[in-house]
Every structure is written in structure tokens, then in C-alpha cells.
Length: 363
Image (cartoon, rainbow, N blue to C red; front, side, top):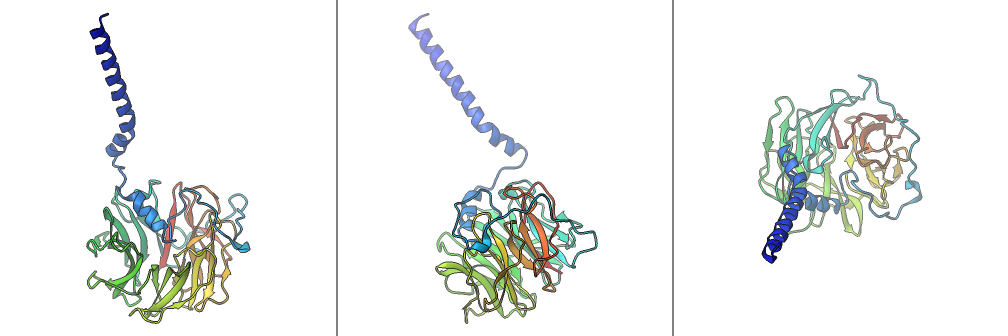
């Protein structure tokens, strides 16, 4: 074999190896594209930004342990000890939530069910676009939620439950989430973040998306209305640690509510003027209830569930939340549970091989 032949053979082998390597690298991506499961391009960046607010989606990995108070020590329940309620044996109303039907945060959807877990079904249908942070309207006829549009842009949508029609309410204001309609049905409060500001801010707008404006100075996220609609409860680390605050809808009169260790964010305000929230370190989160002034704060979730994102029932006597009682430390083991406000009568509503989380209770 001549030197020229050897050179040609060597170059050919190198090109063949390079082609095989390229095919091996691209095959998973090509497969995802063919089946319509290409993730949104900003999923990782946006997810990290949302986690930084202290209000993350269910754990996708176990982060470093944080300082914990003794009451938050994790103790998993033995076996599958949480019963499913009998059909028709729920406290009433509906629960809307985020369902990670593809085990992929880039393609989460919105689901709804009765308070006994029956008639659980998906109500959004954009498979390749993330939809999350839902909440029901005061009359129970529609759902507002946050949806991915493009890089660093999440819009707020309102979906009519009867018709399935979804209406986009915002237009490139930034990354928007946690929308909630006011008790009188006229306004929507939400969180806004932009690359330029790099700050989580509480905003509000008219029900149709017009007149968007900032409510409070300083940072804030996960807003929710007071029962009479005159105030807004939100999470913030403006004093250092993450705590709950509330203020008037004109941005005045901000008062600190909570004094918890390792507080997270998502909270709710009941018709009895009680506050529920969650706190705790990695895999040791628990649901708490307290008075409006922060007094008598106490854990209500049974230990060992890593409870998160609580929401009161319309009558204020029950709490829906996300937990891992039946599959503790399984990243796809988060389900929706309900309990009475004293922590008794714990019931599991969902039972899937993917995460169900961010429940919000309504009519």
C-alpha cells in the first residue's frame, strides 16, 4: 500500500468515526423532535430563576440541606398510609393544579378535579408549551394561569372551563406567574420578572389585561388576595430571610406577617383571616397555619410529607397541598392531598407516575 493509499484510508476512517459520533449525539434530540417533545429553549434558565424566588416547583433534585427548626425534621410515613376519599365525599368545590403529564417541566399542563379527586382531567392542550401556576376565578367558571411564549416571556392566560377557549391577557411584559383574580372579579394580581430589572415584583392589572402596574416597592412574589380584596399577601426577602407580608392594593401599609425559619413562598388567606404557608429545608417542608399578625404559627401537615403550596377551601375549613407521603423522596412522587385545617383527615386526591402540584381551591 502506498503512502497516498494509507493517507486516504486514514482520512476515511476519521470521517466515518466523526459521522457515527455526530449521529449518536443527535439521535436523542431528533427523536424528541419527531415525537413533538422538544423542550422550550429557556426552560433551564427560567426554572433556575423561579427557584431563586423561594417558590420552586416540586424538587427535581435534592439541594443542600438548609438550617431547620426541630419541628421540621423529616420522618416519612410508613408504607402507603394515606386513604383516597370516597366519590362524593369531598368538602366541595374544585381544585385546579399543575400536572406534569410528561414528567417534563418544559411541557407541564393545567388540570382540574372535584375536591374528592373525581373527574380529574386536563384542560390545556399545548403539549410543547409550559403552563403552570393556575388559579380559579371567584365564580369557578374560568382559570387564569402562566404560559410560556418565548425566551424570557411568560404570558398570563384566562381559560373558560365550559368552552375550553383560552385568551391571552398580557403581551411581552416579562416572565409572569402566580396570577389570581380578585374577589370582585375585576382585577388580577401576579408576579413579574424581567432581565432588565432582575427583581421579582408584585404587579396587578384589570381583568382584561389592561392597565398593568406595579403594586409594591421592593421585591415580592406569590401574591394572593385578602378575602375582601382590599389587601394583597405576598412573599419577600426584603428584610433578609424569606417571610410573608401584606399591604393595601395601592401599595401602602406593608406589614410583615410571618416569622418562620426557611419559609418558601406560596401561601393563602382564608375567609376566617387565617394564613397558610409552608416552610422548611430540603425534603423537610411542612404546611403551617397562623393568625394574620403571625401569632400562633403552628405546623398542621402530618410529618414526613415534604408538604408545599397550600390553598384553603372556599369555606376555610380544609387545605389542599402538594406532598410525597406515599412516595417519599421520589422526584415524581408529588401528589395532591387535602386535610382539615387542624391537620386531621388527611386524604390523597391524585395517584399518578408524574408530579401533580400547585393546587388552588375554588368554587
